[in-house]
Length: 310
Image (cartoon, rainbow, N blue to C red; front, side, top):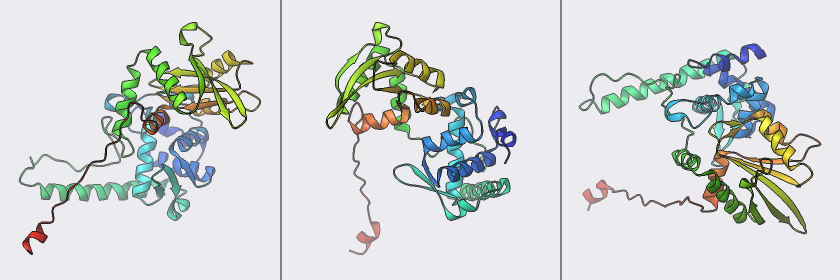
């Protein structure tokens, strides 16, 4: 697939994108990486291989899915289709891997065949649901096709708790969000964590010290309650503000980072900057029990046949 053809799915995204093209791009990206990758790595590699601009990566969804960029949303659907079609599998840790059939997928028509297969399966499920609920059905239901997700639909990868948590953090006062980052860094083992957000210190929101064995590193951090994507220019500005003053940088956001931002963060010869996007931030808060509690729910099953046999 040539670059101009591949980018068609992004440029024509005002309507429904070419999901088959996005599926093929996902497979090619996985092959390029080595057959397995996290969602973040995979989305970045697709953007890199397809030449997706930062502006296109920052284009947000509308409606109930407005918390994520449009590209990431539809790439999640592409992964869902590929998994349903047996081309991908994912682990509990969120690592996506090519299957044997996925390794053989190389043509647009192969991806289209999976689309048709999964949509046909979904139609059959819809018919079965209508049959089971015939007494309650209105008679106006239409078969559901995964191939054309509405803007209000959620991908099967979306975790509602993370969406809710991100929305809560985006409504926080900026100073409160900086204090949250300060608390998180302390829980992660940082010492002497100070918030400097109100000092106008070139965009630096705080500083902390991380000790690793016998060596200590001074780390500057920046916090942004973004809804969209942080681009490479923000990373360059942050590095410029910390130049010659810190050993490492840490950029924390409730949004996402463009592929170009990730490249800039690890550019050779420059001070390294670690990136924490919204989903990773949610996981860290959950792991450290900061405003997120996990409850175990008891699910009691009744065996009616057992009682009949008494």
